[in-house]
Image (cartoon, rainbow, N blue to C red; front, side, top):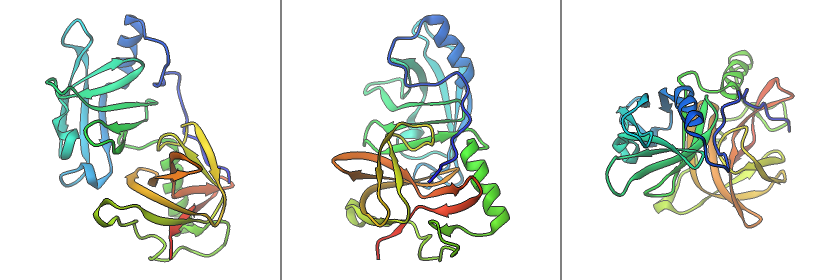
Amino acid sequence: MKLLNAFLICATFGLASPLAAQDADALAQAFGGEWYSFDPATADGGNCKLTLATDAVDTEGTRKVTTEDCRGPLSTAARWRIAEGQIRLSTGEAPDDVAILGGNQFRITGEIVPDGRGVVIERATGDATGQAIRAALSKYKCYYRGFTNICATETDLQLPTFAEESPTAVRTLVNLNVRNQPRADAAVLGVVPRETQLNVNQCLIASDGLWCRGNFSGKTGWFTRSALRDETWPILTFVPQE
């Protein structure tokens, strides 16, 4: 299966080496502005909006964050900074970090520090992958089940449910890439064969659809439910285990 990659520009987080001060300032300008989480788990109605100011408020390069319609840990974010090649959202008070993120100028992903849950934060229009999938859905009016010409049912499209935070099972419809972060440009950890049952412990909604985190061959990674077949047809890559 060929997944459509997001268009990337030069500024990308997740760097191994420390950033020079001028590099940090340039990245702050590039990554400042309005960001959104489209996952209902992070929002208090609507979408969670975070605005990252570009002007530093101290000599450490800390900048202000304002939030709107957010809930949970993201609602407490008041400061952001670039440290060790990553964006760190913080409360400005101890314990400091709220989330540690990396990615590109359209989509940053990582973990909520207090509970270890994954999070996706994007620009208002989402990334190129999400835009392409939405355009394909508008044209073909359905998701196809894997490589078939059969449209997915309402049952196929149901969100996984978690009883008392226990894992839930899904079944893959295609050979599916498992990535280290919930975004199309993240490193591939492995490939799950078609017709494999996977236990997932978290799912979240982003502009390109549902991403779930699960275990495969002793590794933990993320896989997307929505993809484009031959860069044309919108497909589901997994469904709830029957």
